[in-house]
Amino acid sequence: MRITAADKSLGTGPDKAEHWPVPRRQAWFAFVMAFLLMMFDYMDRQVVVSMFPALKAEWGLSDKELGALTAAVSITVAVFAFPIALLADRWSRVKSIVVMATIWSLATIACGLSRSYGQLLASRAVIGLGEAGYGAAGGALLTSMFPAARRATVVGGFLAAAVVGSVLGVALGGFITARWGWQAAFGLVGVPGLVLALLFLLVRDYRTVPLTDPEARRLGVRGVLRGLLGPRTALICYAGGALQLLTVSTVYVWLPSYLNRFHGLPTDRAGLMTALVLVLGSVGIVLWGYVADRVGDTNPQRKLMVPSACLVVASLLLSTGFGLMQPSSLQFVVIAAGGFMMTAASGTVPAAAIDVIHPGLRATAGAMVAVVQNLFGLAAGPLITGVLSDAFGLVTALSVMSFFCLASAAVLMLGTRVYPAELNAARTLAAMTMRSD
Image 1 (cartoon, one colour):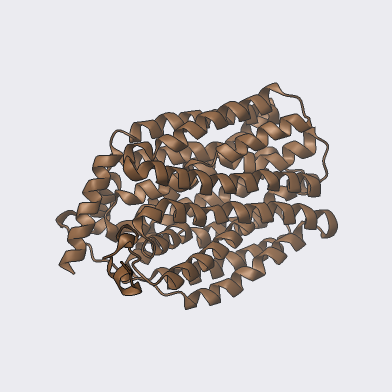
Image 2 (spheres, helix red, strand yellow; image 1 turned 60 degrees about the horizontal axis):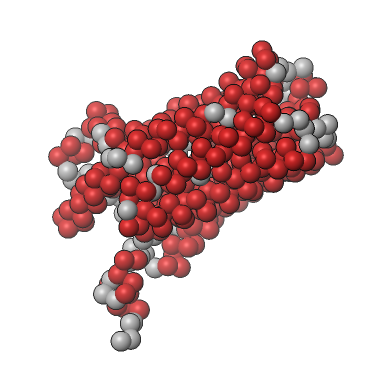
């Protein structure tokens, strides 16, 4: 039997399970634009880590002060992610993204003009203000355009841009700092974001989804929080994702300094080797998100088992590499392998959290993930590591932080018991909402 394009769009043929809410070209254009903006978002965020040796030498900073330069971004993201994403849910995802990208790009350029540690720290905090709701709004926009069966893969691909941007930020930061100084690096990575912000106006937004069920209809702080914190799967994903990111953020922020201090590498080479680990992490996000989608397609309970198993392996590899091995090529291979495994939850966990939340709170659910993960993961990881490093040395700090992957795996395994039932409940509510329109 011949299947026409119309049949596919109506969901009457073999592709019914992959019904596309919008034309595929429109969906993929939105994905490319969102991916590029996320990439520059994290270039602006991560470019500073390769500058640590230069900043430490120029201003005599402690490891705690260096860690605060990354924590400042994550803290402001955590503080403002929820209200900004709620505004995006009720106003416009596209317009919100344009405003946010403009703010963080200008703040990055301002970092290069800083003349003191205080000015640099303040400018870094403003970067976080701009980035606060982007991941949530971008993720919500993409999940509205792609089939549900591809959601974790698409979200994983979108979030993989964060690692690609981190790769480029770390590599370029080290390269430019070694040749022209750290001020130039901020300017060169800040300008492209302004261009992409304007181009993002070409992306089509989805219609704001009304909150029609009795609980969500109350809106207000209490009603929204009930919708976001009610599902146990969501709570588990918030906590498990934050624990994972304590390790991930530590490795990404402090590996260049570790390679500089203990392998004796200059900033450009340390940045390139760290970039390789970040590339492996990016591949891991997409690969393990795809695997989780496939094994969870027939049995949703298995969806969270995939990142749990990967995080156990990551913890063993990283704790062995940093804690038991001397600096060498083999040690770096072990650390890189751990970097490939430690990002396994980065795509699946946000997707699973969004899966069990009311469809009218998608961006806000993504913001809740961002709040918890940024405050208790991305901000806390580098700062805790800096404090431990000042007290006990960087090697001990990195070894200790590796075990948070193990804790994340234990938390996510709890989610396998409740996710299937809550997923079915959310799908039923979404179907009722669509029929009522």
